Image (cartoon, rainbow, N blue to C red; front, side, top):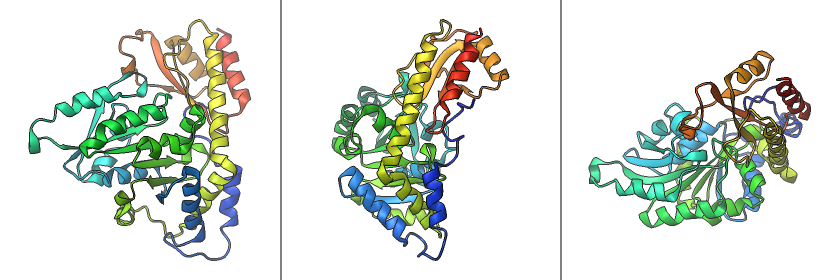
Length: 349
């Protein structure tokens, strides 16, 4: 029973087969292969606009490199205090940007609000003694399993665009956000004012695959150099392009996300029937967060269930000393019987 993350499971069979199919023969290297070219064209079709897409191997690289196109080293990027770029990427954004400051704002449910950003911007009163605000980064779906709607994303864009700032979206679980909202990829990105998207695939069935997608084409001007300097231009690039083509074919990326989201709802429904468990956040993607007694947490772990004791900071005083704030993540590949087994184990009291 492994609910530790959606990256504990393997590669979707169709993506794994695509890697085998592309393995024979020869192909141009360093992004010159047909699979990489076709994947960018397919992304244009999916998002319904002109764009530039650069394939990389990890979400950390995607975020750091994307932010480097938005801000110089003297800039600042505003995000949620628990965003990956703030707490889980070992200063990668600071490294790739040459020292830009990541400003994390605390807010419930994993979501910051435009009013918070506006108040923060009013604090930049020292001219060149402050970093220069250059952008906002939204995680969608968020680290707490909630999602920003297109209207919410647009509100950030409307606030910062007149100030010359750019909007980045960390979409490690972008597919889950789109599937949960039932909107189009365009609605949640460029139509809402997103300038650059870190488009995730690894957590949703790929082996090692993310894309940095620029809707503001001017930001992509030197990105090929940034990617190369960051060690993310693969010589055998066809293995990334083949993954992306299989991921996008027949909307596999959305099929996977819909299944993971549905399993999360199923688990949350089971939790709701257990008197000692509280669910503090809405379940809008493929993560379920639950407050449970420490004794139950320990018993489940001892019985072989794998899930994390999560950071309770966003709950404030909403958790007692003898309770645990726990995270459960569902994958496209999570067997439904594992949910049944976990709920049965809980019911044994």
